[in-house]
Length: 76
Image (cartoon, rainbow, N blue to C red):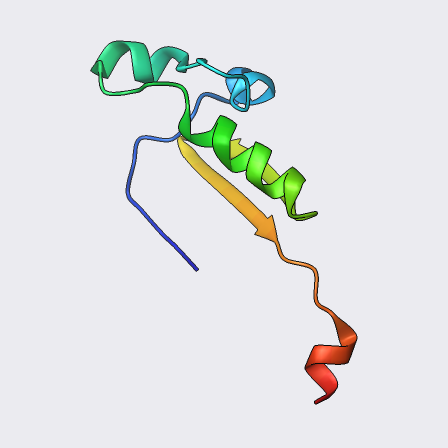
């Protein structure tokens, strides 16, 4: 579990956060965003067959990455 105390992502921008170069309102206002981080996370998750989801509400954003479990490895 990784937690931070960032300012969150606007709910109306959630659909675009995985787009390459998208910084959103908060990124543009604070001039620290490159728009590459969540894009790379999405690409890596896709390549590794992991699921990544994002949800935002009331100034809080949750990014969830689901790692598939290989039953053979867990039984040993």
